[in-house]
Length: 298
Image (cartoon, rainbow, N blue to C red; front, side, top):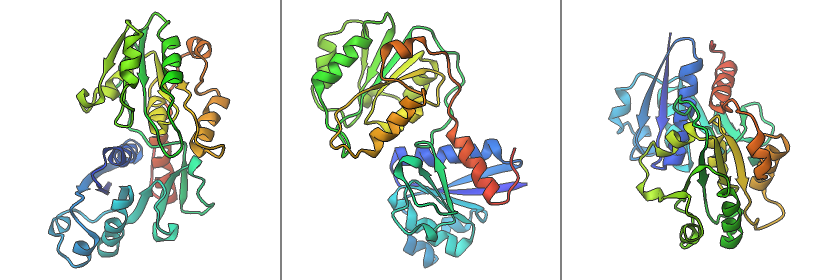
């Protein structure tokens, strides 16, 4: 038995990682073989409908067409019209839900209660390398201002400074959103930390570091990074960031994780927690997709 998946790329690495995670979940869950084919961002909906995307004709007919991000939606729908299969939008599709066979949407986005929606707990993330946790290994990941959060260098520096009092082998990395001066401020007041600029990281650096860390701390604006951390076996902590408003769906999602005891914003709580199992949302959503499609899974 074979299952054919077409993955529609949009040039956004974060989006493509979620599509890859779902495909990985299908490979682990389906009882037969799963073959996937990438559809590059240059292939447009019009070229598909007009029969000008000749490379697609060389692919086996799809069972699932998967896409994450706005630019993937119309090419995916056009390909379903021409070649068949089930169209699966990851995250809010920004088009009518009824246009898609399924949509996998984080619960904090509060989608309507439709029968073609599969709820996920956060962003889908791929499995991390299977490596033993290294005691005393700590990782701190900082985001930056967003439409939901502002940024307070002094407060964040203080929280990071308290973490660095623990006798860990700490690494701290920023992101493209981290404001200038944040890392310099932290480096000036700390000596037991290795600063890693996000621009210098190899493609697998983050996954490798997460897989061996005993503790991972993430600024709460980075919701996708929080859920990627939960794919590890590390104890995960939250660095608080000022909210732009009281009605903040990302903060509410993070607070739910705190209330469930999955993560904590207290150093003492994180220190005494036992090792966790990975969250594995990519597997749960893949199995839900197969179940709803009437396909066998394990």
